[in-house]
View 1: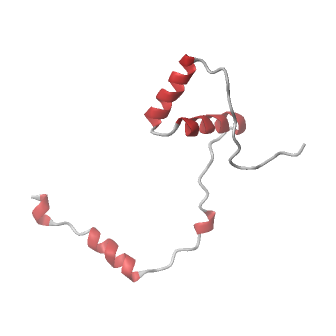
View 2: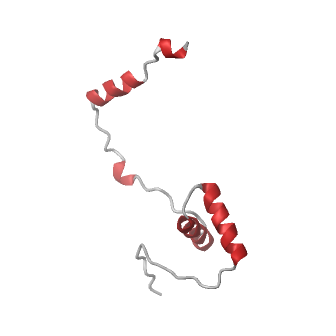
View 3: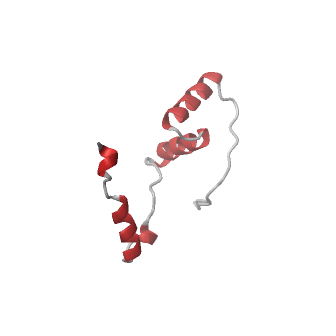
Length: 85
């Protein structure tokens, strides 16, 4: 069996009760995510058993020393004693 692995497919779902709609919208608001993202997350977990993980593998080993950046970060970490009185 060949599986279609295209990303961004769209579904239209009919027959959702008002009670289910309200519960989904409430959960989305509580999690501060869109209704769509909540449903995608739930479908992903219920079908493949886990949520989609962030993939940062393209960034591994890419760090480059940047003295200018380090200076900026150092300056932001200084505590202004007058403001902390």
